[in-house]
Amino acid sequence: MNHYQPVVFILDDNEDICISVKSMLETVGLQAITFYRPAELLKQIETTRPSCLVLDVRIPEMSGLEIQEYLTQNNIHVPIIFITGHGDVPMAVETIKRGAFNFIEKPFRSQVLLDSIQRAVKEDELNRDREEEKVQLDRKLDTLTGREKEILTHLLTGKNNKIIANDLNISPKTVDYHRANILRKMHVDSLIELTRMFLSPSPRPTPRFTPVKHAV
Image (cartoon, rainbow, N blue to C red):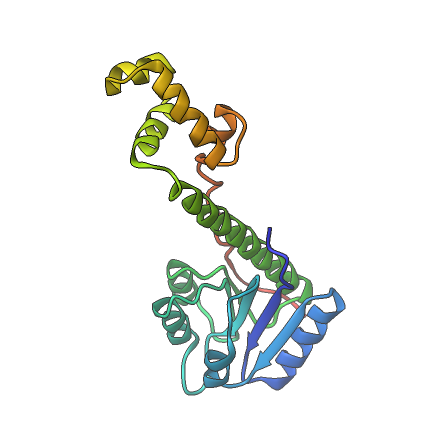
């Protein structure tokens, strides 16, 4: 489970918007860091904790779409919520295709943006937990011998010891010995727990799309 305090990055050349959004987030206990130039954001953004990026599409020096592309190419994964006063449906669709979490047009209601930010941070938190679980699983798998990995593959298909022994031309007793070692190294007490470790996580939720303007 991730215990780092979440952070929201805000990039908009409109100082009033940055101050307003930051103030709103702090009232609900979310840390916010504001930037007015792309270079400042790209120099300081970090992904060691759950986060999201509130990003204006039209920024001097570097567009929001270019920033999104830069983050992707540099393997910086952060949910992006685009906001703009010049957006249109084709632009919104393009940001979503590139992996944006949401697209909201100015002017927007504060609650609309807040809800989207909280969902984005929560999703990033869940994704980080899943990634950490995968890392831990890989580390445990690395402790298995070649024979144990082979038997594990058979166990996960639901085969019993006798069938596995027949398939591998070894004795059921040998299979039982390796099975006990597998459970111990994987830190589980039963085959059911072992199987559950390899179940696929829930699919990533479909990004929200808010292409309509909202009254202040």
